[in-house]
Image 1 (cartoon, rainbow, N blue to C red):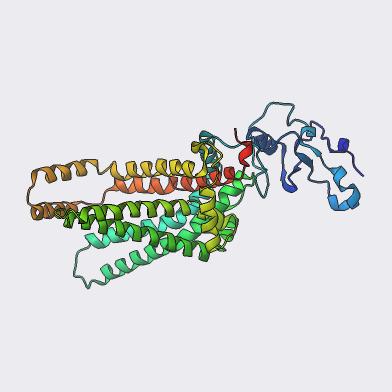
Image 2 (image 1 turned 180 degrees about the vertical axis):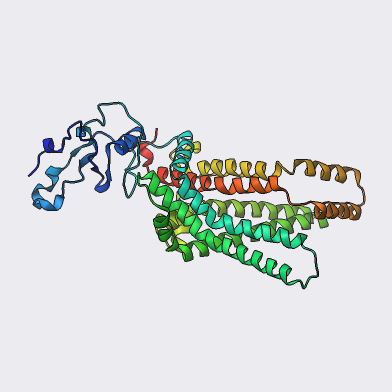
Length: 394
């Protein structure tokens, strides 16, 4: 039978690993550096239960099992010395933190997780990026190829481009699930390998694919609805009755878009990390987005998610429009000086056809794909933060 004194380590034995227990759940094993990292992040408190990983609870009678456990404060070199550079340990879930992350902390932790798993995230990105690059290059070669429409090389290039496009789309569910799993593993202190993450992510392919299709179709229908309203307003500009009706439909469309956006904010996290079903993931996502009403509005999951999405969309817009700014200025000048719509359309079409392959835009597109896991990581961190009880917020 062991007492709490038996759980102390000699200062020279810094390779000892520990198990931490929070609210009945065990996390680890984790070494001293990982425990220090949890302490700095507010996940590990001195009063949390802990025991050496090599102390087997099954080796003692049930009545004496609890004697194996001491507190984290009893671990030498943890709460009595300054923190050092952390290293990753092993853990199934992040220990319960008793303080919510600030928005700045969420962004900081997002970049930290991306840095720690940069090669694994890059591997996940290549799943969709390589087929997409092959498709774009093959399409560009086909468009610039000479010969008749029946040229076998042109047909083969077109078929190859289409197959690569389909493969890129098929890899998206694995990519999405992989980001959720890898982020949760790194946030928990586990250094997961890419192969293990892929094996786990493949299990969610059908469910994630079904939800992806559902979400994209609904958003596409809402966009078509908005386009139809715009056409209705343009066609009925001279009708005083039609314009208020169209504006009412537009308000309804905005409400529907906002409601659905809130509903699907966290579906990826619940689908993968909670292993929730199709309907359950959408319902739980909506409930999480509407939670935190006892918190200031800027600390609620929904608004934090909106801010994160806005930052990402602004970055994407800057990457997409930056190289095209001169071209856009030219289009606006033509729009201001050309009165004939048919002439303007002809000029724009000719300019687009004369526009060659832009290596700068292509490189920026690749950069966007490489950085894209940051959005998924931020949402996982926000999801983990939402598990903190509201009463413990700062």
